[in-house]
Every structure is written in structure tokens, then in C-alpha cells.
Image 1: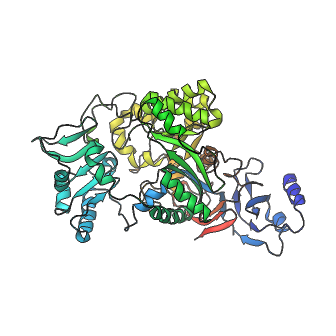
Image 2: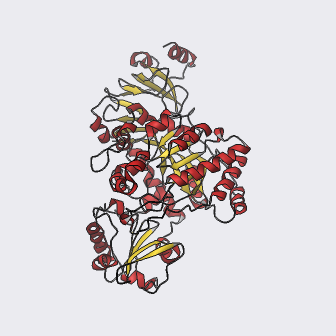
Image 3: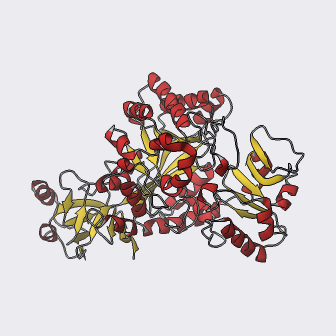
Length: 563
């Protein structure tokens, strides 16, 4: 109360709040006043937090008074991992239906084939066998049945299924030799089934079929930020952009068209020799932190391994005997370390020297260990703690990896959607011991590792039907209950409290972008970003959390979404 009165006393005459949100439950995440009835905003900043009676006394003739009618207010939510341009582009030509089975894929292909010219490739992105009811990929013949007169392809960036016309176009036959960087799956007769693992030189033309233009990117950002505002997001971290993507954000900022504060990650391949990698980093004409409160450069990133959904994540030991779901059988296979360890070290050292924050996609435990090796090498030259180096995904951190991350000050950018949607399919692949390391969020926090919450949203506009679903309240529920899509929990001892879950999508994600003094909580002096929600996150029955909706989203003191 003393702090409140001191702030009010400091207000100069004529500086009444622009708006006062009162008669609510303000969950501030501010240690000095965790819960309040009201909050006052002036000039895009929070200026006071306290009781409704006290703050309403400061109102002037032009102050907007918003009666919350008992509703709960949270700090503006932050998704630490999204891909908005690609997500919006996936539906630029119309909605993409949810496809949970091979029959769903066939139905979608039939719909496309009915209107598409015969020379157009029918392309279905982000098809994962772990999310199919059949727990396998379709065959060429199943795609043929749906689109006999077109080239048809399903893909997830690593595993592609080509129908007969696509195989012919790519000159893949029973006599095609196995590529060094992948595998052509064949049946008992030696005929290609249509499934091609890796070998991007054989299938890359289909993935590059439609490159986004500058105007496409602007459209995508405009449309996607509306959807993010609708679920309560006031900030995001875009987790992988090219120079073209940066230019699109810059154009949006110059026109004052951003309604989301956005930190943008710059992606590099980190291929070639270690010296090549150092040159890649040195050639970038900006660095972490450049920009303003709306558009800022974030981490530099590379993709260090494959994925747990496609059987290419780099593990500490071989996958083992139960890999049929991925379309191959190889008990000695550990996955793909796409960026050699020495290149990760070169990248980390150069990033640290130049002032970059660094991250890398590591889906498997072996890749996470390799990345931490690189971070330790950089730390030996110059402490990295202040640089907030990050592990992106890091789905299987061992006790040793957690201890190393805590010691180095390395954060984790995690997505509970992976264990919710894919846990049941992965449990038999990884076995009971390895599955215990699947996103041990509570342990990580207790051991002092900063964990931020994201979605890895890639496909579709709908917040609950997207790949991956980006609805933050559903994601919080996942961390609180540890439930999976089939209703069974994975590692229930790793469940978070409600406040811990909320922190993942607020102050922790703000910390990840060096913004914890500017946003992530509701306290005087911070940016006026908040969301009014439909239920009390802290007290409602736990299963109602996943159904919470944003009623009002405010960024910089201005309403950007109202239900």
C-alpha cells in the first residue's frame, strides 16, 4: 500500500490514468502484490496496482473505467516458440482439415484432386505416423486410390510418401540405389512402398513447390497475429526466420501494423567446416537485442538433429527394436546429428564472442548433450550465463544435462504438446526407463533451470486444431495434469502447479528474450500488456483450465482483441 501511495503521489497534475481496470482479480506475478483488484494504465505502461477504491480515486475526466465484473486478469501471455508465417501460409488457399487417419488424408486428397489441374502437385504437409490412428504412414497405393491422376505427396520435412505418379516423376524405382543420406523403403517384392526417409535430393522439389513472397509474408503476419491475440498472446518468439522473414517484420513495424511484440530468431545451417560456420555467424549484420519493444532480434539458431515424431532425433543410444511406427527397422540406429559437434562448438564460441544469444533445435537426448558440450566450450572462453543460451525442445534431458544447464545458466524452450499428442505412440518406442526423461519440467525448475512455454505452432489457424495446438490454456493444463491424448499421464510426478504453469507463458518467456524487466508481470513501470480471461485459472476445477478463453487482450494499453 505504501508503494501504491508513493506512485500515486508522484503523478503530476493532469496525468490521470488513461484506463483503470477494476473490480477484478488481477493475478500480477509481482512478488510485492501477487493479487489485486485493479490496475491503472497510462502511456502504454502500468502505473499502479491496488484496490478498486484507491485507483478509481485517481481517475480523470478522460480516464476509461473498465469494470471487470469479477473476471480474472493475467499478464499478457507469451509463446516462446511459433512459426507464424509458415502456419498462415499453410491455409492461404483454404482451410486444411485435421487428419488423424489415412482415410482423412485420402478424403483431403480427393477434395484437392476434384478441382486441381492435373499438372498440379497435391501436397499434404506435416503428416506424422505417431499421430495417425494406424500408427503408420500411408502407402503409395493408398495415395493412388485418392488421387490417381495427380502427383500426390505427404510430407513432414523428413519422411515423405510419394504416390505412383510422384515416384515416376522422381525416377524412383525398384532399381534405384539406396541414397547415402536416407532410405527408400521397399516391400517384400522389392517395390518402393512410396515412403522415402531423408534423401532430400529426391523429394525436395515438392517441399519447395510454393515459396512465400514478400506479400505472402505480410499477409501471413497480419492474419496470424490476429489469431494469436484472440487467445491472449501479447508477445511471441518467432523461432526461425530467414533474411526475407526479417524484412517482412521490419516492414510491418515501419507501418505500425504489429499487435504482437515479436522477438525473431535468425536461422543458419551451420554446415560445412567449423570455419565456414564462424563465417556464417560473422556475416550477419545485426545481433541479439537490436530493435525495439515491438520487433527485436533474438537468438541465432540451427537445427542440430531430427525429430522424435519421425525417428531421426539423435539419441544417447540406439532406438532399439520398436521402430516400425517410423517406417524402418534398424536396432542400431541412433538418429541424425545434422550439425557435427565441432560445428556446434564453433557456432557457440562465435556467437558468444559477438554477443549473440544462441539456441539449437535438439529433439533427442544425444543432441542436447552435444549442444551442452558446445555451450561448455564457449563458456570456457567467456562466461555464457548473461547470454542466456537456450536448448530448443530438449525433450529428453538426463539428470546430468539438467545439472549442466543449471550450472551454465542455459534455458529450455519446451513444448508440452509433444508429450500430450505423441506420448502414447512414443512410450513403446522409448520404453519405460527412457520415457521417464520425457520433459521433466518440475525437476528442471526445481534444479534451477529456466523453462519457457511454447507450442512450435506450424500449421493451421485454429488454436486447438493446429499443428501444434497453440492455445496457451490447454498447454498449461497439459503441464498441470501431465495427461496425454489417450487420457493416460506421462510422469505425473513432473506436474506443475498452476502458478508455475502460468509463469512458463509469462515471466519465464519474457526472461528468455531479456524482457523480464519490461513485461511478463503486472507491476508499475512495465509495459501495459494483459489479458482478461473467462475463468479463474488459479482456483477453477482443473479440467476447466483447458477450456479457458481470452475475453479481452490489451497490448501497450490498447485493446487488440475483444470477444
